[in-house]
Image 1 (cartoon, one colour):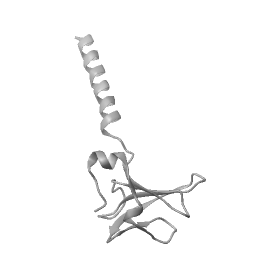
Image 2 (cartoon, rainbow, N blue to C red):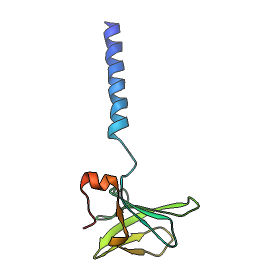
Image 3 (cartoon, rainbow, N blue to C red):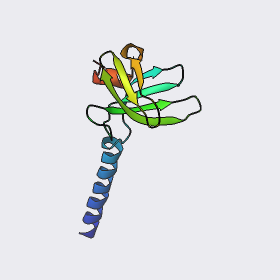
Image 4 (cartoon, rainbow, N blue to C red):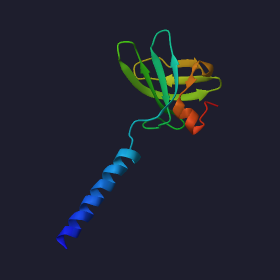
Length: 110
């Protein structure tokens, strides 16, 4: 009987590890990206995190690898992104490129 309990515990541990590896991805999926003149890349994600609804998480990175985390929303034909300590950024929707993830999920910025 102790051998069977040990096998059950091992199976439960393996199942939990597999669940964590596949179902608990804590990194938000980047769905759109844009390059800028005064920054390297703005990445829009599908995660809400600390952003007020309908906002979603955005990342703004520079060539020196510095990155800020903020929030984005679509207003008319622009993406409005707000990052701590910076003025809001307004970028035309047409400047963003869809990622493979957005294509797979059939997501648009409309």
